[in-house]
Length: 324
Image 1 (cartoon, one colour):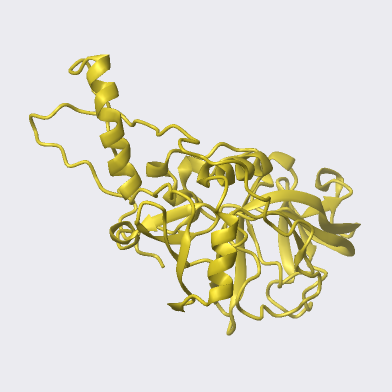
Image 2 (tube, one colour):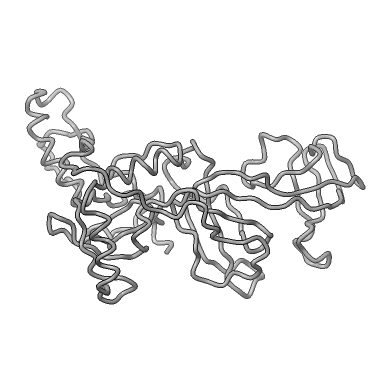
């Protein structure tokens, strides 16, 4: 949702006076519906840490292996979730250059049966063109020719997940896990977490280890009540949507605003049913001190990027445009 600041219409004092109301609209996930004769307003980012009470205990399971190399077929129910800062790696395996042209080489994929149509994989010679996959060829592809031996794998690389999707690819019969990611320090292109960079950690022997997870004490889809009495739905890593915002994800041109929940949080529902006492107590205890902005800033430090204001946060991690 968009909220705009006055452009030569309101004084600075009037803009300042209107800022809390503008932030309130954004926090609630509502659009600012302005009449034709009303002043036009620019976005007014909220101030972080207003009312923040102390520092919470740091959550997360750093070092936990989410996907083990060679786990085989995707079992469903991914252990990786959007926003996770992870380390990916794949042990290098021997293979051969099968064909070449000026721009690319074609290698035999060592983890694929030679009779499989996906056994032959193209690999750009120019390192700057290798933006869609973390796999590397040794020695460098620029000096390789048909018949040469080489190795392919992934040197341990730190990234953050933008989208985690279970899908059935063309010509496949079972679900595959597609992990969309960005290198640390790079924001999604255009603010959208499109899967320009992706991998399937179960198709190849890729290991995925957790470095940092925001809101590790919560699960995707949790329904909570914040300290203001607002009911919110949680989308990893840090997206909270009010009910009317959660129902407005079908327009890629005008996505809903996220909310900034006020701690402490009360867990109401998990996995579609009333939350049990142990889960509710875990969420309550984790949010008794500190605030939502602390979770934002710890995630930013781990991922090396700055999150946008709430009104532009949703498309970083949540599918918009009616594709879900």
